[in-house]
Image (cartoon, rainbow, N blue to C red):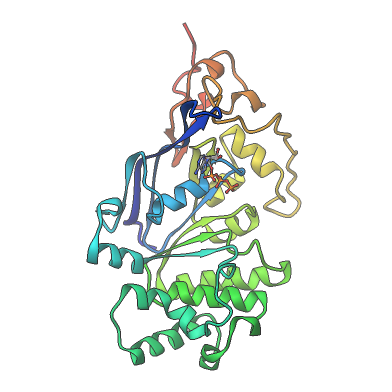
Length: 330
Ligand code: ATP
């Protein structure tokens, strides 16, 4: 695996303005995503994990250029994606694709599979019909489906086959990065592992990078090289997948993983109950955003000062437990 970044997010921040009150009222701004810094290497899989509402969707939408950041940048292949237009933008749309949980929810049932799979090529590239057919057959083959499927209609396929077809459509433009947003959540448990293995095979064969968003920690453990744990719009810990799963350092990561199955048979994890709810972005906690729910508070500093993300032995952790010296508040 080559670790040159194919994608880099720097200071990525998204604020939403919310109107309050019935008659115009006041406008308040909430921070959905705050100052994210991360990269994805060529052929690498980075997973974003965290509870619902922590900002994963907002982040992936900015990476796919479906949403504009309030501040910060996303560079893909060295170019700022939010500054692209014309041919540069079309090239970006070919090179970055996505597979969602339910990619079929908006598909026209009268569209043949050939046209569904071909869409990214037809929209972003200028190829002859014969070349499009060739690329569609190649993509179907990559997901284990024969060329005869190209003439069929959506209703002729099962859930697992449909997800294979969605993956073929994501592959048809030979992308360098695919965003996998809950890619197996909508599938029967019995076929999830087939699709997860397919992602792995595709990565080995084509060297594509993945950004994975998955609630299911078993999928994350199996597919991801590195994990970024998000809480309340910020990254609180990043590191190699095995390191994070075997020895989480942030109390939130610890709690999140404690609810999952043990990584090694026989290994026991005590479940840590997360107190309370994720805070409202309208009234963010003072200090560390996780402190009202934390089982490892070390003192007033947690409620008074926001911790920084610090590099610690190949890991980045945002917690006062990992400050240089035990933090003190004057
Ligand atoms: P889920 O897994 O439920 O999709 P998530 O981790 O993807 O959650 P986001 O959907 O990115 O989280 O939301 C992050 C925060 O931003 C939440 O507090 C959400 O309410 C808020 N938010 C997201 N989109 C908007 C919007 N268009 N307007 C206002 N607030 C928004």
